[in-house]
Length: 566
Image (cartoon, one colour):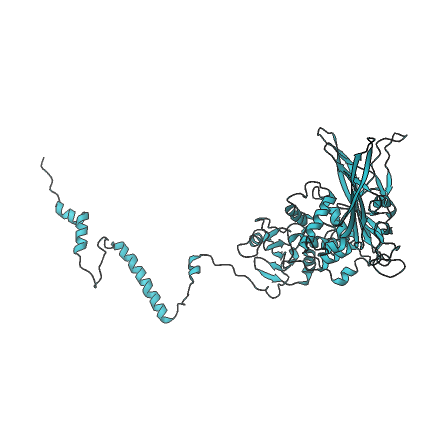
């Protein structure tokens, strides 16, 4: 069978459709001449394909059209900064002031019932205490108000727009960022940091004032409940007692101590909140001061474990004295020492004995050594509790008058301390306020014991002159020195049953009884409970710490006669 002749030769087909080899293409590009003085390629690139030439023509036409519009002035010139070129999203625009007619925008979303400014000022996200804002809608703390701050994010996510700066007390709307200056927010700013004028502070003990919180509950400023977070009732009673010491209270409410350490600042804020006549709630929380105390005391005093009120009082007074600029060596260098510090004379005599010729033990009188010591708290020792029961098989609860245990400081009765006989005597001038510690608890290697002896005392007119060494240059001899009771901290032992090996445990409950000077009434405060108390029955409980105020007039470093004012 013969072969069919091809219609086209193989050379013609290769020349029409087959691409050139790689080497042939490179050689062709090298031999090509430049066009218009410019090289058509860089020696390694191919010339554009026909379909690509069409695209290049479209782009070139667009450039020509843009050039024509530019010559006609129809296209504006827009200058872009480098930051705007890099960032696809522009920064949000902040407002310096609200739009006219919208000055009260978002203020109706404020919920005063959830606002509680007693807790430590820490951001709820970052736990930072720098530049903290409080959300006035939900009450939470957030840091900052810039476009990348936690408060800004909270405003966008939750729709809460009103915030107050906890330091400057300025109110802002976020995310817009402008400040709100409205009289309707003055009550919130006052609750954040209560400030009373000198005239208002001077009338605290003269005018009978009653206030109501947001829930309509009535309370008396200065006699409010204090939150027991877990086991900080020992702290609550001490703070309540110190808040009713008039010179210390007035100093904390009027003096500017913003440059002092945090311990003094937080105590001042807590005292002002106790006496706040426009509070949102009828109680306060000591959380902020407790956190600072736990930090300063290396967790010796915390809100989760019980402590002794006297140990805390001693530690707190000394550290508050240093925080207020007091000296460790110079007396009277702070308000603490000027109010509570007095001088005590201590006479000590060593007990020595030797056997004589008849092998009898003979005591010899040694030399008496005298020293002066300064005190903030006077310790009163109770007589030993009875070991046996009475005829009715009931435990006897003994009673002892306050003047009997105060005889420790009359300078006549000696007490034996190991091999030393000691006598104590108070010296003039007595401090404006006396702190008594009635020692009830003793501890040895085996057991801790409590003395349940009841101490009877007068509410007014305690004469301290028998226990002070006469000094005619400072005080006329024979004149009484009257003191009136201000606060009485009591202890109660409560037995609780648990599943431990011991069975029943004895827990301590602390209460404080406070005198209302404006009404001449007494109030008992236990955590959040405030109840009226009768002055005639104050001594029926186990007193532990007492605060006595020196009466003005007779016995008050003045020459006036007659009855003094409490």
